[in-house]
Image (cartoon, rainbow, N blue to C red; front, side, top):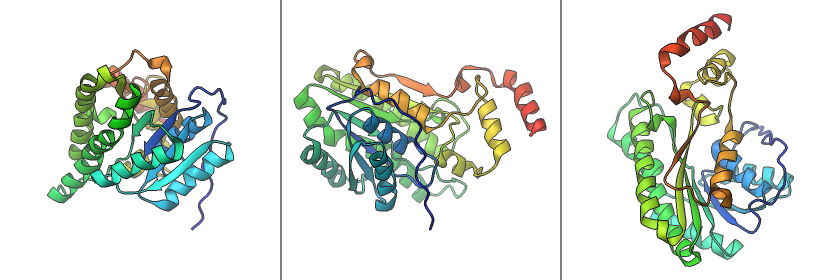
Length: 284
């Protein structure tokens, strides 16, 4: 199957993360449109970090690794299942063996399947990867971060944790992650470990577009863009820049926060957006 390279915008190589090691879960990709994990992994590598690309699919991991190679970044691939404690410990051990430290963990891996079946098995699968795996992965890096007396954990949540409209299990998993972040920030703060969330909105991501069945539906993508206060589309790179700030020492006094990257979607009455959306739909 044809798999065109990931599109990477120009990124200034300013060394903001030089000497740091970052683990990014669910960092694989396919095709030109980046997801949150592949964008964050590529951004961190462009800024000087050694990045461990974690994914259960070797082909997807290699696709992101190729993108990082094209920009001259440093990365290594680790293919594993992070829904087990053993798998997560293996990631941490691999990061230490490869780069010598663990400074940043981005808990990004997630699924957002249609929940129409509403089965117990589906609920368990979503909560396992979207919530429990993040706890297991954080537990795996804690010994090294505590030893270093410094670290940044960044959880990728969703505006579905802040507003209704997403799948029930997906929203529950992301809401739980929001609260778990605050508990972890309290628990580990005195070890110099910061824990924060980045909450994507209607960004143009393979997961979001695929979940809604909107791949290639330009008018629906336009409506998603118009739902924000800025009126233009966000993407994975917007999330990557937010994660970059939380990974760097520029956010050294920020912990336990949720940063929505949603063009203000969650900060306005839906009613006042109706005329804008109606006009966009009519003109589409």
